[in-house]
Length: 249
Image 1 (cartoon, rainbow, N blue to C red):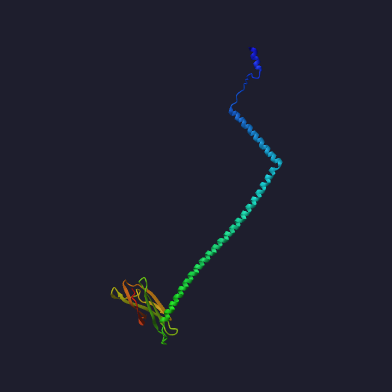
Image 2: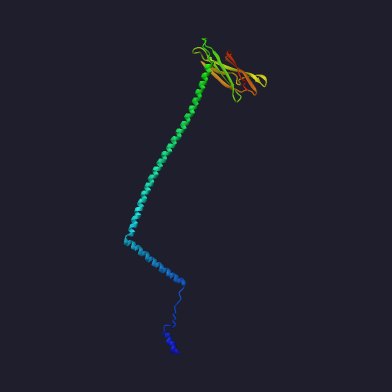
């Protein structure tokens, strides 16, 4: 029996038992990580050493220097374009300022032209007024006379009046006098008359003069006539009455 057991142990199928010390799994992973890191470091060193031997690193440095030079050139070109842009913007702003100034000057000229046209029209109206009212020369000595009285009711209800006075003769002396106006008509169905609120209007005339003003009419008043009187001191020099063709209101 013992012999069989001994022979069985000598055969291939004999059971074998090995006794080993157990290692913790965390320690095994740490050892594997250290080995892998060491292998990676060796591989990286081999790669860098191979690039240096092959001259690839030198080419990379040259490309980097070339890229740096190109970047500097592009920065210089960008600065140049920026300066040109700023100069063009300054020119555009100057052009806008000139355009605004020219527009303002044009508007001012238009306004001045409008005023000149209004003054020209006023002069034409005055000339027409004078031509209608001035009679033929009589050859008398220099004296002041009333050549025309006009009156019209404005949309505001006020009565606008004007009186033209002329001294006949050549180079007459200055006439110093006053003008009194009397308005007559109907107010509220009754006879009505009125004078200027401030009384007579003082004036001085060398050759001719035109006085005008606005008279505030009372409510529901129709003016039928206007009488103008010129006094020199207490002496009545001229008088004229005009009748209005249409009622003032």
